[in-house]
Length: 276
Image (tube, rainbow, N blue to C red):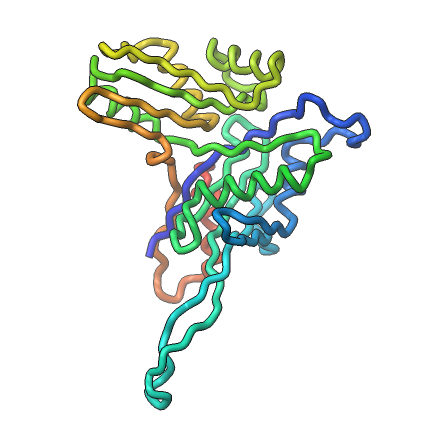
């Protein structure tokens, strides 16, 4: 069976009031490699999750781990024991593949879509929150946001042309230099001057918004590259939520006798992350 991995962007944002005794500066890449090399335990929705780094080799550009929880499995004993009901404890885990390197499309995370564990967004956001709690002295705060298929928004806009009554953009402030446009510069100013990590912009007009503008296109493109969310409403109850349109990578279904699951992930790691 083919395996699906949903894609997210990590943004490492400098803390506005860091402890002067926090130690020397470290690069974003070094920080990502450090915190994702640790075993992490946290709670989400009253369930306990464990993140464990993988020790297998994935090359210099990729690191990986597993994030799982304990389950109680209901099953039956063999016929010799009357097929009696019984329970046992087991673990289910999603695999996580990370590109920690700093480049124009770097610092992405691919989380396996294993619904028996939890949705990829929920387990990653819970993990990132715990990392921030575990490292209050660090110079960075990590934000994670889904990378969306921007075409899905424009499909919605085309179907509801002249009928969209509200759009809300939730941006993660830019964490590094790269392509520059007026939207990116404005968000960078909010990060540097107001010390904002997240910025929201909401547009409303009950008679219908014009979304075919340069500013709207810049906002959608920014979220498509850097992460964030888009929500829109149109007349007659049509709604759009970008979190339902997260980009993904696929590992093809294995052939019989092919290498182990871990070897397959290592082989397809860059493909999952969109590096090839």
